Length: 439
Image (cartoon, rainbow, N blue to C red; front, side, top):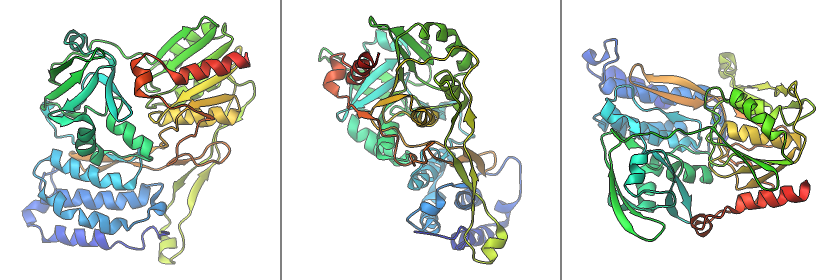
């Protein structure tokens, strides 16, 4: 439904009227901001207005944003703590359907209330949740190993726990993104620090046991490395990149590059890569091309008050993609494939879009998360709670829209629970097969 950006400020006007009706003592300016009903209404109205200014996909919404925000007013006013307020505001945010637009956890939380996951990642396959990578030797000593299945969480079946306790608060751009951000990576076990995690588990041998995990005091004593690299017997290099958010990744890649140059082909595994700094992904791409390549174009909302007064359609700022120059060193020219899944997100998707634009090799796996962009941080209640609102819409170099869709692989390969439990990786197997033929 096409909408003029500020043609309807009814909801904001109503909220401002409610603010004026609140007791005068609740309206006095203070530092830090007073946590009261006036603050709650102020935060809701500000979020509603800031989305109109900043949300890059606002014109694509198919519902009336004002009416939706207004409908949340009773629930927001009924909240008693910043934590409850955060949950209601994030629940409202999910209706925008964007993985890069979120309400952030309140600043006023005590250490006991901070949002923390358990020290392991999870995988979601065939409607089953498995412990994948573990970052605590203490949990390993309790019998939790990779491929251990999570049967119940706090007394609820794992699938139901994710649907009831996690999914209503997950901002996502695609169905695969929503599933991943509910059940995978570190997302499935996130909760307040003061809430223990009661797990019923089944190990790979079929033994069922229970473990209580206390988020505060549980050690994270194993380092998550951004890169894992090895070479197969056929001299195919396999570079797994778990994140683009680790400081100094460009230098670490440079240290690996001399070994990569000795291989006959290369697999770049971006499955479960949650993104980070696009500069790091661009740094790697510059080693894979002998010619300059242009990245995809992007756009962002612009608001011209005079246009609103004339009832004219607002324009968008349009920016041509920057050019990636090859590095000033030997270029890797041998065959390359990239592996992806529904948890390949943000700058990892930028990598895939630009890799495809280079026509450098095939992408194998499942459609990516379909979410990238540049959030603008907005204080909703100063000193209490902020939001990030996606302000930038990116296109692939060929003009393809992938936000809200995902980058569709050239070869689709679906992983399943049986292969996972048997130690098989059909996506990697397909990648090695393709590269063996291409060498």
